[in-house]
Amino acid sequence: QLQASGGGLVQAGGSLRLSCAASGRTFSGYGMGWFRQAPGKEREFLGAVSSGGTTYMTDAGKGRFTISRDNAKNTLYLQMNSLTPEDTAVYSCAARAVQGSSISLSDYEYWGHGTQVTVSS
Image (cartoon, rainbow, N blue to C red; front, side, top):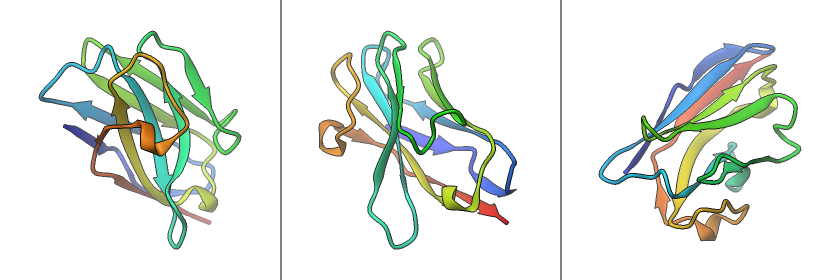
């Protein structure tokens, strides 16, 4: 199981660090990703990290967001800086039972409950 946390209300320009804690199995050998869903929009891929630590970030987060993982803690992180109101969304984490990451939602077998991020202007 995956559980995202760390969301909240922040002013524009602020930062948040999201965590995704895994339980029930070891996800060290799994590719993991972050997704978000803004009000009235479809869920979108944000970024991912392979089991070996190779990261990929979409243009939406490039230069502002950083993905990392701590396999010893079975935890995935998303450091978000310079937040804007357009980043307001429910953020979710997911894992796939292969080492590589993927930009496709359908490639992920395990999904966690999301955490709400609200950025005020």
